[in-house]
Amino acid sequence: MIVSPQSMSFSRPLALRSGASIRDYALAYETYGTLNADRSNAVLVCHALNASHHVAGVYAGKPDSQGWWDTMIGPGKPVDTDRFFVIGVNNLGSCFGSTGPMHVNPDTGKVYGADFPVMTVEDWVDAQARLLDGLGIGTLAAVMGGSLGGMQALSWTLQYPQRVRHGVVIASAPNLTAENIAFNEVARRAIVTDPDFHGGHFYEHGVVPKRGLRIARMIGHITYLSDDVMNEKFGRQLRDGIAPKYSTQEIEFQIESYLRYQGDKFSEYFDANTYLLITRALDYFDPALDYDGSLARALARASARFLLVSFTTDWRFAPRRSRELVKALLDNRRDVSYAEIDAPHGHDAFLLEDPRYLGTVRSYFERIAAEAVR
Image 1: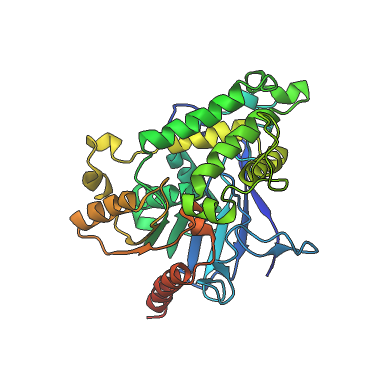
Image 2 (image 1 turned 120 degrees about the horizontal axis):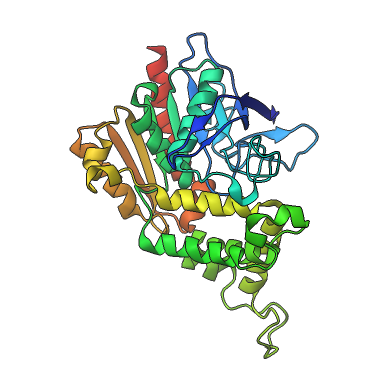
């Protein structure tokens, strides 16, 4: 499936939860499949931390440019683009095409840098709704996402309940635990204390806080994998031979080499201010906050039907967090399907090709497709 990125511009200011606003911004997006005559087969895919609008397919002449959820979306795949019109959107503040910290602030004529407004999940959903308006799509057959994308999918069902028929929330949670917020803060401190960060205005200094980004990615990557996967892939294997070098600074173990490789790669393409923005949006998300902590009361607004999926070895977004959502939805007598997949891959499992997981999503979308033709 050959795809092309697109962009939509918005001049009207978007009011944000922080009290700030942003105007003259653009959203990068891609679409897959064909919108049917009554515009009832649209599926919005929300992305996680370091992903983008490039959800599926490849770019012309670039066979290695597969979208980040290509196992899930495409012709004949669980979300079948022969049946559904799928939209992937890059969030505001990202570094993959939508307006973000590296773009020029129309109010000052200077690059935003650290002055880019703080984003929340709810702000992203509002921006996505505007894009759908521009595409002439009033109602979504489904909104789906994993991890932070799952939070956005959930928020869609609360902010625009009349516009969503199904919410598919994968490897996600109703809010972050203190441990998750702590991991995010350590990663942010690694970035902001990098001498090349310059208070977030590193662009004008011609540098990139790569050291901080490397450490942030290494911390994040550890949390995405399960202990079983790390032991199976790396164990205690030494990088060079079987004898240790007895060095405190050189790379000794294979797992160290792997993490440094991931960190180096990440620092070459991801924006430091974007990392701060997105992890803070994760921290802030808590739909029960305005309801005295009652998740059931918060989710009473939702009218969609739901599929929730979790993975047994995902300790960052553990199954018990998905079960909290299931209980709160059932307390409101909502139609909920729930699958807890016994998979060894940790949080990254939602991106991988597990037949049970993909089969669950396929069955659910076949049900959605059957509804559409009745």
